[in-house]
Length: 283
Ligand code: L34
Image 1 (cartoon, rainbow, N blue to C red):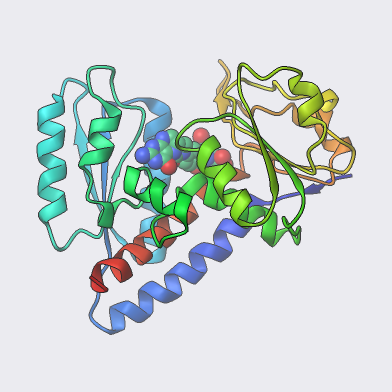
Image 2 (cartoon, helix red, strand yellow):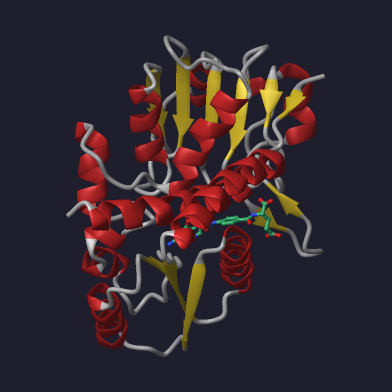
């Protein structure tokens, strides 16, 4: 039986660490505030944003919610971001994705001050990750690294295979694994022999966005399998990109969905909010 990597438990430990830092800062008269912007009412986004607000309440971070209608214009959203950039009482700005098709995600992300980019999506944050400069790490890949490390697995020298090459998961995930001295391969929709490549992995990170796509035939015996996908079926039941029941008997350790990577994304966001305050103070 594989180790079931408990993202809820590990995220709880990290949130407790953050809560301690926030409490210490509060005693020095410092408050930390996250602005959470949601456009429209996508039910999944509402759940994720709600979980972020709960985590803020738990850790003592102030959260300020901005709920904009689906019909909001890009100019109006950019104006709000501008206002939040200039508001000294706001340490972090998060604009929940996806945005409606009439709004350019890349323009919105670029408009966020790099000093408040707690998602780590800004080109400056991406560049800092690439070159090893200080900057915000994207929450989901940073959370995956924590899950692996806190399971007692050393990444150094391991064959790491990332499936998926998005700007918010796949690419930064590869950079972080490289930074941990893994030997990293990135696979995507044009990859030939995906099964064979995936089967080389000691550490397999799956972020393709297709329900239960990865079964045991893609997995080496004894691999660590991290499932970044999250899907809801008609009945509202959640599953990941990995066919858990098929892969679990073959893996050394595996993350479930829910209760794996999702809660870690949120815990790392809380960490980034404290990092934001420190970064802003040092400049
Ligand atoms: N700007 N947009 C921005 N930043 C992010 O970091 C995100 N992401 C992704 C979507 N858009 C974003 C999230 O917050 C995905 N994501 C996210 C956050 C939390 C959870 C899942 C995805 C989460 O809480 N997952 C729970 C289950 C929640 C449920 O019931 O649906 C879990 O246990 O996996």
